[in-house]
Length: 238
Ligand code: UDP
Image (cartoon, rainbow, N blue to C red; front, top):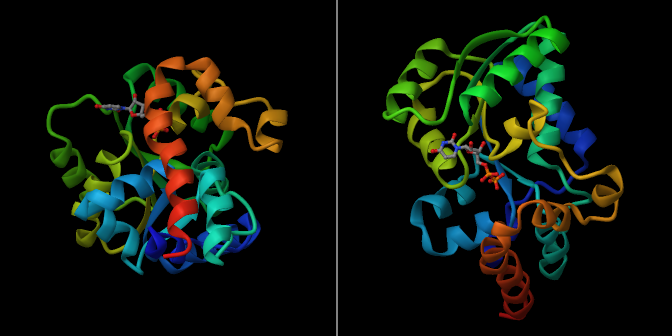
């Protein structure tokens, strides 16, 4: 696990925003991976996820509080969390200011429709090149279309690890664009699901709010988050 902590982006969210702005200005091709306990736990046994995390071309941002805190054991502690939800919002702001293009792939049709409407209303200078829900048969075919459209930003909401693996498989074919797997972010951004109240976020208890709202996540939480913290603690001396 040690090797994964070393690749984390450790500067502030503000610094990262400047970096994103430069990527857009320079038409850089970039894959952003949101690191949370699940990402690291998967990468331990899944070669593809491991390669994605260790590819120095990719940005690995510290999405989960457990990742931020545990990184302290390894002497590479990020100054703060940089979440996928906040990064997606930052990207929309930047795209709007720079009048650039966006592609959305993933989540349910009704979520996507609500999100497209919201973006058109609140970010009128963004040109949406496509919005495809995540329940289509052939997801590779959707990516072929994305490659052809060549958006400045492509957000993929299919859940981990499918979204990361699809991006990794196809990103080599594009010349430019920021690609990020965003999990359940569209559900929150569209207003269909609530993000945790500010106090929970401030107290680093967003995970608790999510568990309270969706108790069926408890098994997933135990297998990833609880085991992750334990392993990160034990592994630190190895
Ligand atoms: N999803 C999808 N197609 C699928 C499976 C999932 O588009 O075949 C979407 C789902 O609708 C949700 C997102 O992927 O919007 C995954 O959300 P989840 O909350 O599980 O992701 P997390 O944020 O926990 O990674």
